[in-house]
Structure formats: C-alpha cells, structure tokens
Image 1 (cartoon, rainbow, N blue to C red):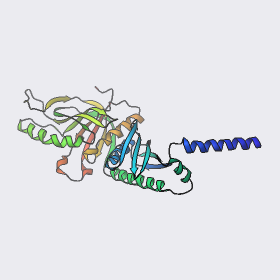
Image 2: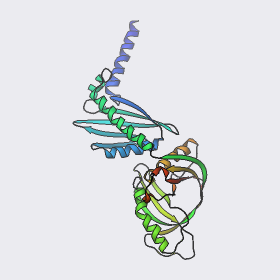
Image 3: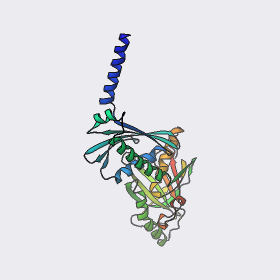
Image 4: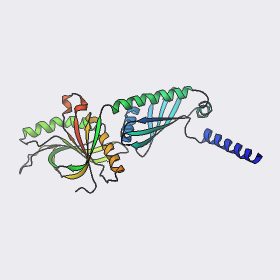
Length: 298
C-alpha cells in the first residue's frame, strides 16, 4: 500500500510539473464551425490583418497557425489548430498563453475565472462571430466529376494575392470587354480565370483573366492581351454563389472533396463567372462555376 502511495504521489507530481512547465497553453478553447477548414484559415488571416496589435508569426502547413496579440503590456500567444470533421463541419482548437504570466495563469485558471481567461474568450467570440457572418455570405455546392468545356480566349496575365484576385478582374474587365468588341472580335461566353500558379503557404496566385472569343484566321494585335486556347479537361466542379472576392472558398471545398474521395487534382482551378460584379446587387445571386482539373486530364 505504501509503495502504491509513493507511485501515485510521484505520478501526481510529474503530472503537475508537466502541466506547469511543458503543457503548451494556459487555457484551451474548443470551437466548431459549419464549414470546411480552408474557409476558417482564410478568415483567420483576414481577421488577423484587421486587428491593431496582432500578427501571425508562424504557419505549420495550411491549417495550423501561431498568432500573437498584444493587450497593453501583455503578449498573448494563440496556437490555432483547424481539424476537419466532415464536409460541412470543422473543429477549432486554440491553445492560449500569456507569455509574461503563464505560470500564474496555469495556477489560477483551474480554480477561478481570470482576466486572461475572460479576454481570451471575448477575443475568440469576436472571431467566431466574424467567421459565422462570412459563412452566411456565400454558398458552395459540389457537383462532382464533369468536364471543363474548353474555350479559345483573349487574356490578360496577373499576379496577386488570393484576396486581390477580384480587384485584378475589375481592373481588366473594361479593357477586355470594350477593346475586344471595338476590335471586331465576337465574344463566346462569360469570362474565365485560369490559375497557373497557387502558392498556398503565402496565399498568392498567378492567373490568366480571359474572355472567350470566336476563333478566326486573323487576330488583331492588342497590347497587354494574349490569345490562348484553354483545352477541355476532366475536372471536379462546384457551383459558387457569393462575392467573387472569396470564390477561392470553393477551391478548398474541391480539394477536400478530392482528398476524401482519393482523386488526384492539379490544385490549379478554373473559374467561370456569370455575373458582372461592377453592376452590384445581391452577391448571393452571383454565380460562378469552379473547376478543379483531375490529374489524368489532358
């Protein structure tokens, strides 16, 4: 019995030491969101950029982040872990730590509600509110395997952040729509974006913004415009409704779908836009078709 007591006491002491000095958080917050992980990650990055004294200091893959926030003289560190559950549900674990008062917090949190605990809960409640507001602003419907029909196009070439994609479209829309018509070219469908590079770690893309045209024997030279053939290819498709600024949410949904169904994809999507955002209106009525080419596509 004495030996058992010694073992139990040793385990308790070791557990306490682990909690006080090795456990990575002073306080753990668990949340859920009815969306896929990519939406949460992108919303987190945008939310971070709106805070006056916050910075994402480290990324591990695309679903784990370390964020630092300053409140007065205190620096709080949040370690974010985004965990997919199924197509429409994700878990969010946030390991929160006050770098200057970690030991005190670990001693106090189990027995009382500390100022650190209240601040953390309020901050993360604000984030969750922003996330849920964003989730309500768009819809993604996975259609499944289909074929991108292919088009002959006049295109401009751009390099931006993912968030800046729509600004690039808005800038070049008048150039493409008016100049092509003045040049006597016949349009052949709604505008298309072809992603040719996607840096997921840094959220940057290189893409062609294209207007489909009827192919003809002689095409006029137009500065800043190149003529490209976008060939037909097998792809996964999703329908997206919402502001085109965040149509990349469908990219992440298609990547998740491909992974769960063990389908190889290029991670270089194409987008077909059926509305002109310069005309305004209810963004939830805007429609885009998002194609994620399969790796066995030609």
